[in-house]
Image (cartoon, rainbow, N blue to C red; front, side):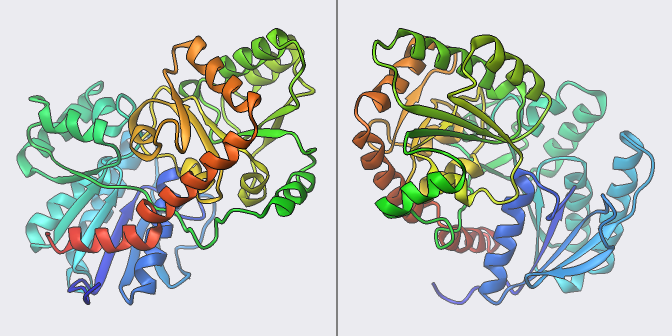
Length: 387
């Protein structure tokens, strides 16, 4: 691409790497990709978990603000610090990129109005659980939406479903949605060869069964308990017991409920609750099918990482998954509230194992062509320039 006019970017977020989360991971990976293009990237965020006030990570300058109190007070203090920092350091950045349309977005947009600096806001999660939808449920949230209606922020959304919702909604006419995408490091996340796949399964304690993998925070909207229940039904209904394993990586408020379900359903031999893992690559390389039964999902980082590793997808027909997965080619999509569709997808992969391999090849191709972080970095620079 031609050399960008953007030489410096200020990233703004509630938290940042090494705090773990989808938004934090994307912000960090995008920041690194921009640094590799010669762009100076600075981050301002909250100081949590005893992290240092200032440090440089992979060429990204991170400054963390100490806050106090909780809830609204914590948010208010952080907003003021973001606002005054952006005023004082306006000469040091060309554009501000706010990750999530939470309270810091208000401060950043207001500072941008005073300094004349372009400011974009990235919306997270899927419709219904995104910051815009949730804001309408509280008084302070409604004030924020009123502010947005006056300032008309450019909002980056991660799925065509969310884009169309915001674009056609009379309620959110103040927003200027723009379709964007998450990215994945397709150089780090790569498919294993056949013999490497067998070794990868052994490395995480699995036999050469067909491995279904779920990665993410264990929360209600992921519907993993319901998926485990359907998993048990399929096992019970098959005349010849299929050699398959379900591996669930992550932790969260639904962990105890999942453990109880696995025990009560008697599927402990085929379902592994692996807990949280710092390095997910070994699990992607061992997997044949990635499972995402969520009710709503912006654009799953884990799904993109799995696709880059040549893993077939089995996901809800919602939000970003509908954009990333070509049904019947790179994965199998289903209505998350339709048990028959979910079981049909499971049986399709069980009946002919080679299908997962063929779909995985297409998933890898899609990840490289559409979602590589290099491509996303090119696109975001054009957005920063106002194209």
